[in-house]
Amino acid sequence: MTDALGACPVNPVGTMIFGRWATPILWNLGTHGTLRFNALQRLIPEITPKILTSRLRQLERDGLIDRTYHPDVPPKVEYALSDLGRTMMPVFTAMADWSRQYLTAVEAARLAYDDARAEEEAWAEG
Image (cartoon, rainbow, N blue to C red; front, side, top):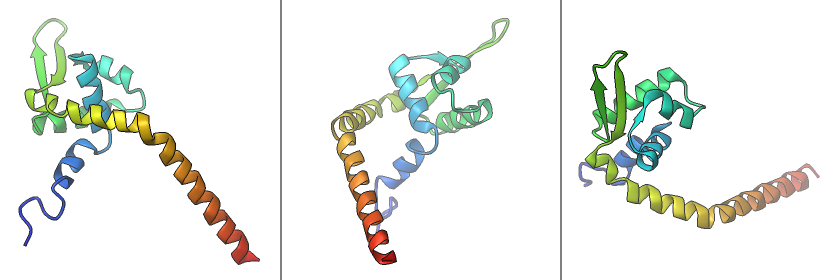
């Protein structure tokens, strides 16, 4: 029998922080500190305003970011990692270190795999 986390205890966290756009949002807030919406969007130019808004709301709901509204004229909204969100930064840092160290090996493995598959297909076609 499995516990509430299921067969893989990383899965719920993976779904939450590695879902589309969550990682770059959290990484940028973690490395740049408190940011306004437009500044965050400039750091992630591929994301649309609608999707950024949606992901920010979800990350706020998950407790990973804090949203602060300042009723100035014009109003100002800032986003920052919450205390809970900051606990994820060592995980992101470790993953960035792993990427720097091993991504070249992953790319080499992919090329070797693709080359081997191309050879098999060529041989099969005869």
